[in-house]
Every structure is written in structure tokens, then in C-alpha cells.
Amino acid sequence: MSVVELDDVVVLLGRFPALAGASLRVDAGEAVLLHGPNGAGKSTLLRLCAGLLRPESGSARVLDTDLGRDRRSVRPRVGYVGHQSMLYDDLTVAENIRFWGRAAGVSTEQQEASARRMRIEERLFDVPVSRLSAGQRRRTSIAVAAARRPELWLLDEPHAGLDQSGRDIVDALITDAAASGGAVLVASHELDRVEPVVHRRVTIIGGTAVESEGTTRVR
Image 1: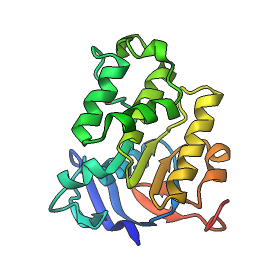
Image 2: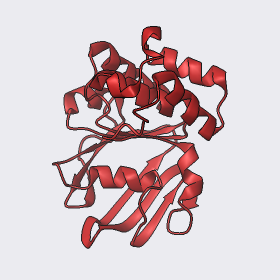
Image 3: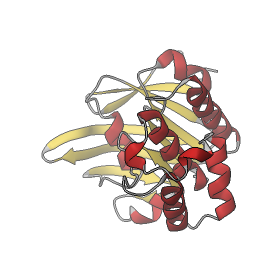
Image 4: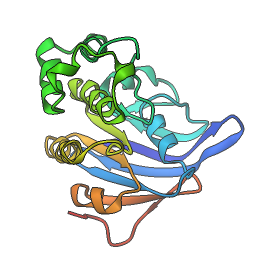
């Protein structure tokens, strides 16, 4: 079953075509690495799939929803982790997890299980996000996304700022999400790190998607 279906999609940021006719298909149970230079359109593609950007033209369907007509209904079903943490700096770690968990309609048990999976230390639960290190913020952001049990993971440089333990957790999360029937899109410059846990690589160049030869199934 197709989770992401993009066909000749154009996305404008101002007047600039950040995506300029991108086509991509991602099926359930598949993890895909998005690779390419800075400014190529990787983050824009992820934000489009998260329902945060509108397609200017072309066809964009995510989780069987036409993003040209309805972006809002997709958002609760995806786990988007971008460069910005999407956390409230003045709230504690625990308050952020509770707030976003309730907004997504997930149980307290799911919220707690997600925090445990990311190995967030209990001593941090009452610490405001503004006082966290970059790695601690990243763990919290991923915990918030994981609590939703998303059908589609959208990860933008997910290993950034994490120590070795955190990076290993992210690798396991990608593997487990695909194995359980979800879909994963990972934008990363760390090919050696990510390729062992994905099925194929797609290169984003000038706002278009190019399937990399010889990487139909990486692992």
C-alpha cells in the first residue's frame, strides 16, 4: 500500500520553487533515505508530507489524503521531527510530552513508554526545555513524535546532536517503524549511518527526486 505518492509536485517558498516537479512513492513497510546538498529540497519535501506546506501544482497524496485539498487531517497521523524542536521552551520536558500527547489523543501510558524508549532521564522531567542540551531536546522531540505511533515518520537529520546511545535508538526506531508496517522518510547527510537501516536511497537535486541506482534495497 502506498503511503506517499508525489507526482510532478511543485512547492513554492515565496516565489522560489523549493520543489520543482518532484515525484516519489513510498510504500508501507518501507524506509527511504533522502540525500542531497543543502537547499536541494529535502526539508521542503518532508514538510510537504507533514501537511505543513501546500503543493502549488502536481499531485500530492499522503496516507490516501489529497494534500491539495486537505492538509490538516494528515498531521495527527505523521511523526515529524524537523530542525526546530516544536517544543515549548517555558514548559518542562514532562509538560511538553503531556501537552503534545493530549493534543494527539494518546494515552498517558503511551507518553510514558515513548519517554522510556528515548531513555530520557527522570531528573530531566521537571527541567524547562530552555535549559536542555541539543541532544536532550532532540530526544524529547522524538519522544513526542513516537508517542503518537505515527503511520508515517518524517525525520530531518534525526541523529544531529545525539550521543552514540541516542543515535542507536533512532536507528532502532527507523527499523521497527518499517517492520511494523509504517513508512519512514529520513533526510540525512550521514549515508554511512543511515543506509544500513533503510531500504533505498533517493537523491534530491534542484527540487526533484532521483532514484539512486543500485540502492533498491540497501539492507
